[in-house]
Image (tube, rainbow, N blue to C red; front, side):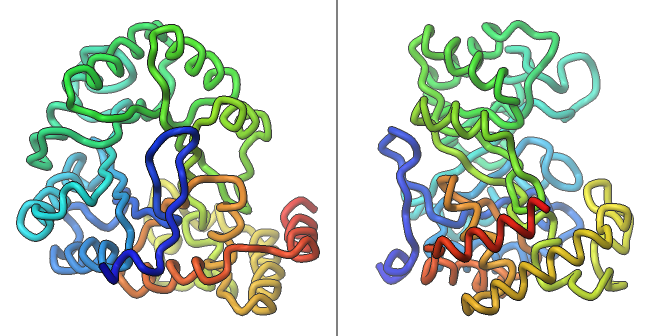
Length: 321
């Protein structure tokens, strides 16, 4: 099929799974406040571009759960015959419903959350189920019990983790292996402006576990949107719990402009270069979008993923100074 001709697919750790270089996340812009027609265009358009991995979580919206409902509606009305060509992920761990079982890592929360997610998306199983964040109070073995059970029940084919630090990641990997479970992937906040600990990448590499970079564009800071400051029509100019005016410092704007000059020399946009850069150490880059044209521009990175040593040195000088 034409949709698979240009996209690059990359092996996830030591598994048999191939991820597209660019994956689509539904954290923002797929909730009840988003026009359905635009959501539909982005998901169908992404698939036509060769993006086969769609990343969700129980609480994505707003309102929590609505992104899964939107995705499920599009999947079942337009992509049902292509289900086996898609790699669908969801997560549990952040606050989803009231009461003591609505978040964290208990077996009660994890299993109940996945059942709710499957119902919202009208699916029999997801391809990947994550524990979304470490739980300081629930025994690790209990969280692993839940991951084991969802795999054995067939409700998830693979399991992963997100937001674990290097020590927690190592403990989770070792505990899973004692139970005969192999983690597929770790979802890490990773961008030129958010460098993860080298220790966590080393742990994952040694264990042959994949890495998926979320927020690889630093919530839009690594695009041309903020090169001249904060536009009045932007998420940073409005109320947003994850990106606000205070996040966009003069130092970051200066760095973004310096990086943009390097991107121009490569014949890329700043966003394209930022995505290609995180793929030097990760399996796939997880992007968000508010319109299809952004996705179309971002997938063009497959034409130039490689960097020269000089380019990497120039980039490192900017981001680490």
